[in-house]
Length: 245
DNA sequence: AATATATTCAACCGCTGGCAC
DNA sequence: CGTGCCAGCGGTTGAATATAT
Image 1 (cartoon, rainbow, N blue to C red):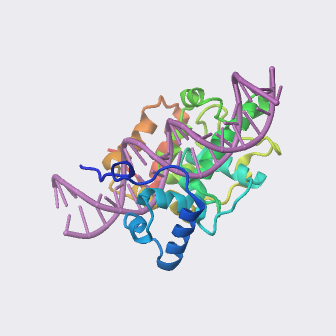
Image 2: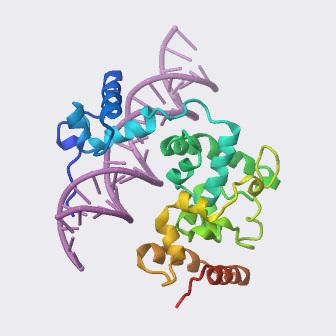
Image 3: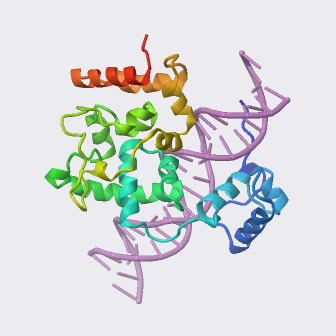
């Protein structure tokens, strides 16, 4: 498949946006909206590629963006959602009004990951799977970084013994199990967070088909399951109406 | 005050999936 | 069904800024 050339091949500008460019983009979108990002810069008179315009708008210029530091509640929400969803920043951002996926990603990498690593030094906090990327992946029977690829409603549960200790997560601030603070994970929640594609996969009575589903199964079956985890997933799949051949 | 080092975050890059043809 | 285009996503980069020495 041939990829359409982007900025660099078209003599378009890159790098930081000037206030004038910002204003031009804002004015154009306020007047005409952003139906076609690719066509937008040309129509608006900007020497930028559509991708750059979209990024600037969604991450910075959008009027509903909340600026400033993250609150403790927001940080806790990010931690909780990351535990469930992995690096699915857009899904996490969907639960934090006014925050962008890029911003959340930055906060995660600069503040939260570090904080969790420090918390890990405290014995009762060691259940949280972030020690460092490699360790946590290696030690997780269910790789937390792949939670986003798991069948979505599986994410509403902690496997009963996904490891001997990892089903109970404690936050640094209050010592409570973080699961107590989560929004109720009903079907609408997961449909919203994960998008209809994965919901469709889980709800698909035909079983697992296609690359995504193979990956999902791979993530689950490549592990060396304990009886407990096997039982858990057997029950889970049965309850979801998913039949493995 | 000058320099080195660490941190932050806006922006870019490349990939993927959806859709139209 | 295959191809091409597009929007969106997550990973990464690098300039600007802050902090330490």
